[in-house]
Image (spheres, rainbow, N blue to C red):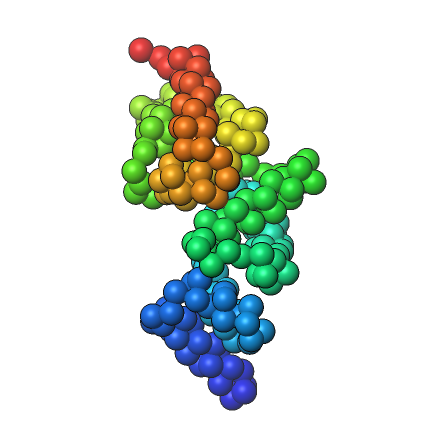
Length: 215
């Protein structure tokens, strides 16, 4: 038992070290590439463990798949660290790998569960989030519970059926709270393309709202 406690204390200390360290993500990756030090790599994993897992959990709607893709993402970081350009930022590069891994996982899994529609994080562009929240809102009363449940199910199916390119943008901008330029860097597309896909998603959801809205 004592050994287990010591292991926990050691892991906790490493997490604190990763959080408090003044070394940048980019410097950590380049140091790992140079030395192969597993402790350096572990610091990168700890820095993004919760954030990236939550992103993948929302994207995939399945905890087991998210865990597998998380592990696969950092395996790719390990395998591709020699390809990382020193003038790039690590976070968009990491999210680019994770998003591609998640897209592949979704394609392999035809029976994936839809992502949960949680309250979005604060972000620069909230159009999609505002519309989703509006679509989900309901005037609660004793007679409209079934209607509200039906609306939610239709909204979930609508989001699930978005094209993969549009679905990825909605997840990055709305759920992950990235700015347009950050999402563009992750997906390696122009900022204008991100905006157009967001607006297309708004239009698609707006059609659902027009269908479901009751004056």
